[in-house]
Length: 220
Image (cartoon, rainbow, N blue to C red; front, side):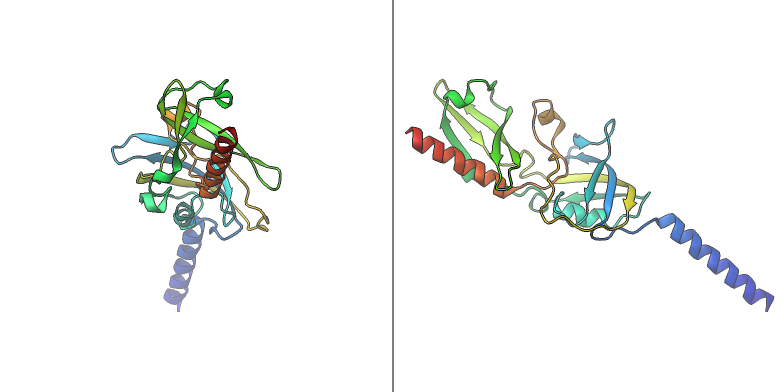
């Protein structure tokens, strides 16, 4: 009888230790705070929270890449995980249709243009919010600017090391997706580029492209 009681106590204790070690589970609506480091295949770092504030996002609101979120929700508070997102799971493959050439006119008067740098298009949404879409300058001439609307990380396989710092109880999801700054490569960040493991918004890029095309037609 004493042996049975001893086993019950031991098993109960192990259960409590397991519950404490795993921490709160992440569910839709949870507010999650993470620390992360993102690297390319060669080991070079494209983005990290090291030396910066951790990233906080609402699960299920579309604030980060869906496949990134799928991996994060598997991690308990206080735990870490390493995983890789293939290009098609992250920012997709580069689309040749998102490369366009515009006249080098007044729109670029106050912009420092250099091949390889990132500039931004301000796109006003229906709800009044202004979304900045990053564009890479791929070619310059005295009269024209060729811009690439593809995300800076398009076509890249991304390795992540993520630690879940905190998980808050689920709360109501917003009707409209909140927009966080997009995660971006460090070298692009030095040139004011975009990047957080945050979700690439192809719709926004398409809107920016259409706006630029309409402007070009009007001026033509």
